[in-house]
Image (tube, rainbow, N blue to C red; front, top):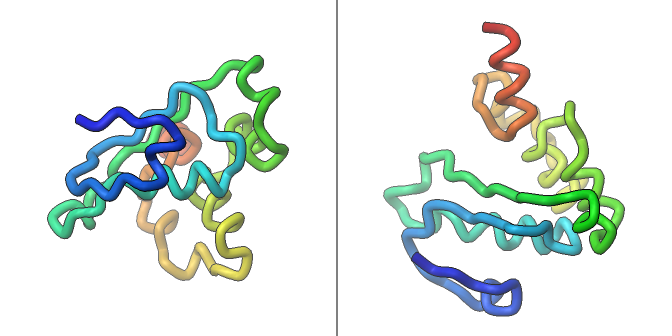
Length: 117
């Protein structure tokens, strides 16, 4: 188990991270994407869907930028797609077939999939 602050997490290159848990949201979505990428850095984990969970309150969202606020509060769009769009605006998310394959990329995708069942 590795527990790190945001200051340490930028330099952590630890293999075998199976989950990233934020007890409050990072200030910027680019920080979130970078920190979320810590999960699954081993070859044996590359095909796993490893979780990155963000706990937040309305008070904690006061300190984040607009994009991170939208990411946390959006209840319909795929959160993975929102992150991809921020990091690479020209990336064609649908071309990789993630949503078409029925992956549960985020809480919103899981909720949509469960409603269909």
